[in-house]
Length: 184
Image (cartoon, rainbow, N blue to C red; front, side):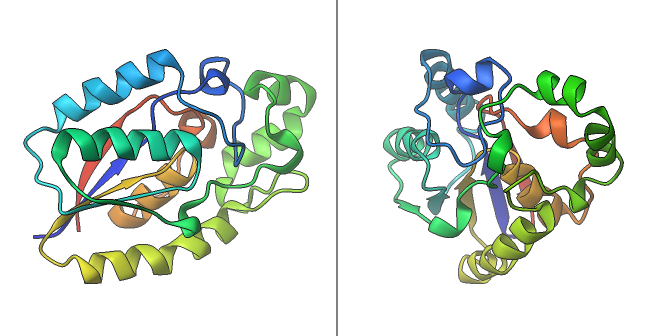
């Protein structure tokens, strides 16, 4: 059976401030590094064939840490770049909720139609990665691979693999080194 280990990078300073990171390239914080080390221990019994990661610094650092601990190869994939949140990048989620309550509620009610000012819609991001994830699944049939990608792209990929829907975009905005193993 094939499996995909979806790994969110450890947190960055922006994640810890509950700011929207989007495609900003921010390094792991010290607590983010500790989150990654704990997570690696949690899925120690999962045998990984390969690790694929987003091009951002936090995802690459997370993938590198996993690869070193697990003696596994890893590769950066540009198609896993995070969603571009346009003018919202760097802003606090709470600030957007207060200053743009109608838009915030609209996003809660229908996240797939979400497109921040000057940014990429979730639907476009999902279309961008869906075909690539399927290619990786075919390439690694009957193997377990890891995909290290930041939020909210990680939730998009996980919901695609599980054939579910995003319920709350804002809850999936910040990285904390979490992971989930998804049979495919």
